[in-house]
Image 1: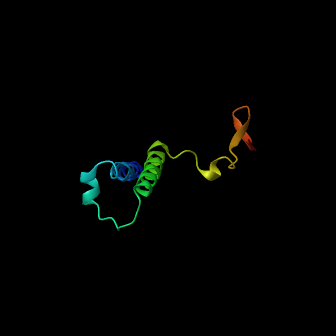
Image 2 (image 1 turned 90 degrees about the horizontal axis):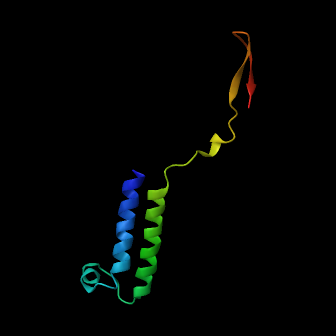
Image 3 (image 1 turned 180 degrees about the vertical axis):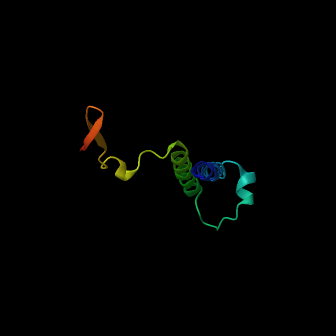
Length: 86
């Protein structure tokens, strides 16, 4: 789901960057008067960066995963006599 959202946000960002450069795109977007083209470019670049961050992020490790202690068995012969935390 994050990948699809990343692609959509990136596409909107690319359109935001291209809108001031290509008049056909700029005419189809309902834009209030007085907003400079630079704002569209900056917003588009930010959206592309957010979309790419969602695409590149593969989930990583969970926050609590590093603090969780793992227990390993202590053997005496074939019998388990206890557990040790690592």
